[in-house]
Image (cartoon, rainbow, N blue to C red):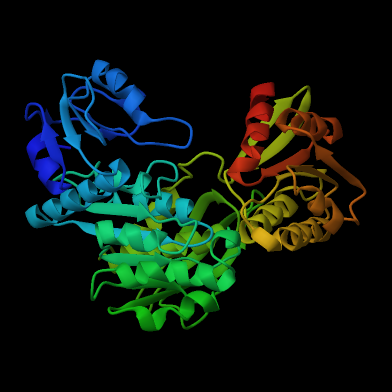
Length: 465
């Protein structure tokens, strides 16, 4: 970011104390990431107060800080009531300044599952047409989204944003910051229903993106999901529908879908005017939906079908622990690891289990499932449903991890080999105990279940083949 401390203070209705330094480096909320010319945002968290780390940020080169009270340091201090809200206000002012200076299209993505993969694919497509900025990992909340916005500069042609929510009003807060030019709605699922008061609350929260899109902006909807299709009347601009099932209502459709032995999809990308072949490198049939969403977004912003299809065929998974398939040799056994452990809900569990069934055809299939979190009163039922999916898929061994993971085992009562692990290390040991040459291991669960640690342990124990 390039701005004076005085301009920043005015933009966030703060008070500048000290000299008017010029910020020329990144805006950071972690003092360890500060560098020459940085602005450090001192936030109060559950476990730490960022004000205590101001000296460290200055040592690393920060020239200005957001603080909620004056600190005894020789640095430009912008005093604000709430540092997190000030970060959002700064992002809003920054993006409006960029819009006034040049051509910039902002496209935002939400949905109960698939946001990050769709973001990664859309980033790679749009980068074919111009400089594009997108979130690192899953920077999709009131801190991550502003930090992503503040990485954009005058050269940025496209800004891709991911919008998550753990309760009502969260997405509305994010759209107030950026007012997207276009919106993508992926799906409405059972993720984190506990924070929304039920499934209807999830749908209402996801619809906040459409309400917050700039008037007249295109809205891209998954017409295969009736809860998303029901949002169409909220759009004030063109509605572009996509369909992985080939539904003729879709403006952007997948036709002639096929899967190779590694569960990678190929299909014809079809629009009313054009056709182009796509061969995905990402694993899992469910990624056809994410690829179509990304394609529809790029087409809505003016790219042509051939360029979009070619970019999709080159695109790869950029974020860790998302349907990452690797071949390993662990303790002398040749294994296939499907690492989809970043997060989990009913829909993404279904996709992961389908990949395990497909890739593991002919070998021993092992599922290591961390619990799904923030499900409220539906937790037991949804875990049991996943267990039933495991049994239906012909999985040989089920290993659960977490307080509610035993419900997986209850739902999978037809699976003979079922265990609950005490911690990630135990889960990894159990997986290797039951595996042999040719086994395929799926590791999946909510981030807070620490299932991702199981995948990391298996990688550390093995060598890539």
